[in-house]
Amino acid sequence: MQTENPMIADFVKVLNSAAGTLAGLGREAGETAREKAREVFGGFDYVTREEFAAVKEMAATAREEAEALKARIAALEARLAGSADQA
Image (cartoon, rainbow, N blue to C red; front, side, top):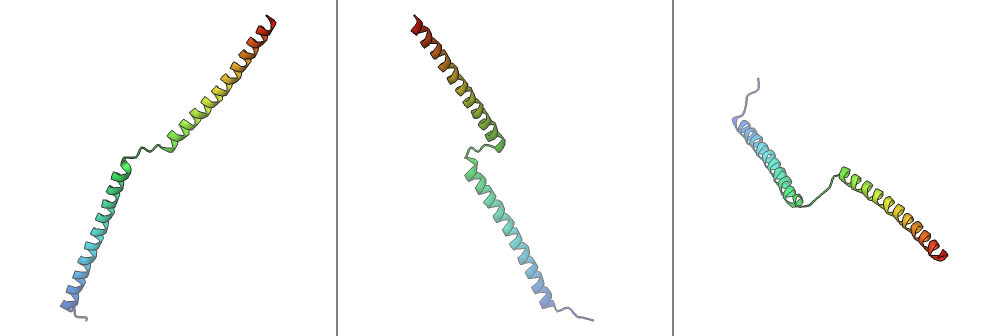
């Protein structure tokens, strides 16, 4: 039969308490760091990937429409220049 040494038992209790305290400090430090990051980055105006893709598609469509309008204007100007030459 093994006898329990009260000094060792007390030392183990102190170590367990210290480990619990350190774990709590670690959690608190992590939460504080996350909160600070939210404060710092919260002021930035970020867009989601989906929003970016939608705006990119809108820009491509607008670019295509602008090119089509340029071609239409060039054709109309050519027609006007041709009718001016005939007069």
